[in-house]
Image (cartoon, rainbow, N blue to C red; front, side, top):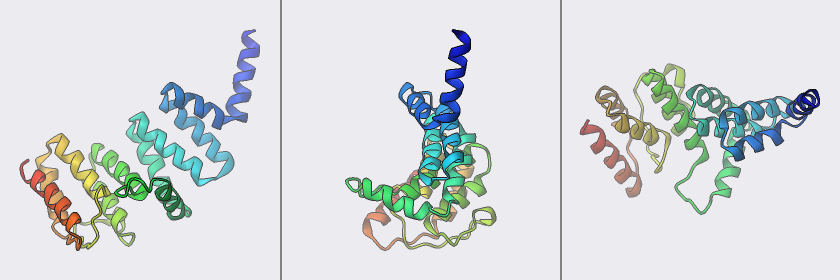
Amino acid sequence: MLGCAVVVFAVLSFGFPSTLCGWCEQLGNYGFAVKYASLSYTYTGNVADLARCAEDGVLSGKDRYIIEYCTRLADHEDFGEYCALRDEGMAELPSFSYRQYIYGQAACAVYRGGDLDLAMGYAAEALDGGVDREAFSGGFECSDFPVNNALGTLALEVIERRDGRAAEELSAVLGGVAPVLQEERDYLDTLLAALAEL
């Protein structure tokens, strides 16, 4: 019986990883779900399976999964098209941007790992695709600053951790942002005020 169970589990694991991923998600075991989603992506190469890896990585709370899969997703050739599809599905939440969400999660995980410069590079790249996250030096100018963007997500992480040094550096980066829309200016001002208190 035990041998049969092992064989059945092996067949399910390698033959139907997407199904097992779903079971793990239902049980709240996102660490295992990431592994099955990754195996499914290996088979299909489908950006949706890679997105599932990234999302389960975020839900697992494990920064190594978040960094690995959010980065791979952001660098995927179909990422822009997939973001548009996801944003369309979340039309009832006008301030939601899948691109900003993925980059924001990656930025926060990198920051928690101790690399603030790279974290800010990720967040800046989310707003300006021309930014090279690996070579980000802090000089940044941008006129678009949508609510719940990746830099804002990183700022909230810094505020939550009450990290004064990071707050100072992030404030300097945000100083180059000049939003046109009033809603975006208000959002930026709120973040800057909270960072200044640290």
